[in-house]
Image (cartoon, rainbow over all chains, first blue to last red; front, side, top):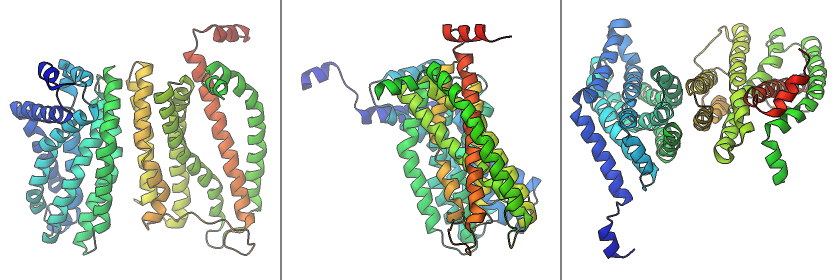
Length: 235
Length: 248
């Protein structure tokens, strides 16, 4: 194609479509403040329930703090997942996305990154504050933040498969949990284990290697599976 | 080859062929099961550490082994459904999910029954046990997804994707006893040496039991799949003829 025809029919590059999708999703999220705030509030409330429900005792809390933060992050991510494709499915823009000539992998990846920026990153940023409230020992803070930083994108990526599979269904809330939560458990186990290991003075290199491997796998496979699932659901 | 392949995808062909296999499979299961159970329950010597409780192994190990095979089978059948749109593959994928869930549940239950006298607990948050529990949840997830989607075609594809993604848990279960050094013991090595910890008199009946349970699994899968074929092909002429021949 010559420059001339390109000018007449402006083609969007894959990178351009990727950026446009990312920008659009972030813009939509910022226009709907509630969607933006709810996952974070949910995360804060769930964490708060543990001292109230288990015990306010500092020794007991510091022992479970890593797991509490991780489980709450997982639940918050899952709660916000529904926004990922739901509104787009209802107003028809998801079909446009599927019909676009760009590879679906990158568009899905852009949406997943947007989801992580909206729901995962705030959790990572807030986690030291909650760790402090749960009496997490000082030496474990960096590990907690780092594991969440690597782990929460995986939650978005795997979760995206579940949402894509269930987007066309009426009662999807519970089935989404049944599908997504078992897939997310390896990340939860490794992430929380790394933090507790640091508290006992054990090395954590292997946990980070595993988390990194899972993230690499999720980045390369999950958008493909999500794309396939979206095509099935929208069909 | 291609003829064979396309025939394999035909539900009617499978229905006819599996009908011929079934009597043989019943016979094989009976022989293997009776031999294996009698040998395991009556003639295997007591374990020097575990005494009579070792006999649970002859049920627990075959059941657990099958439950590990179900998810890859479902994933492969799912992949065939997605790539070649073979109807039979999806029927097998649909039928193997509840069987897999049952066997996973049975493996957990027999493991608990074995664990209570040996470990002193029915349940522990051990790597093998927990990953098996997650596999159970994954099976439930696949079954739930299948029942939630109304269009059978879409349900087939969606379940195939989920089965393929969920199959990553299988190697985690398989190697859980080697990667994490927790309560569950690693797999024992078989040995021909009569004075080894696992002499042939202990493991040969186990192999027979594994074969027996595998044959049982194949029979259940075939029966379920035949049923599924009849349900899905109920409008086709050959099923109508078949039902007409059947004495009511």
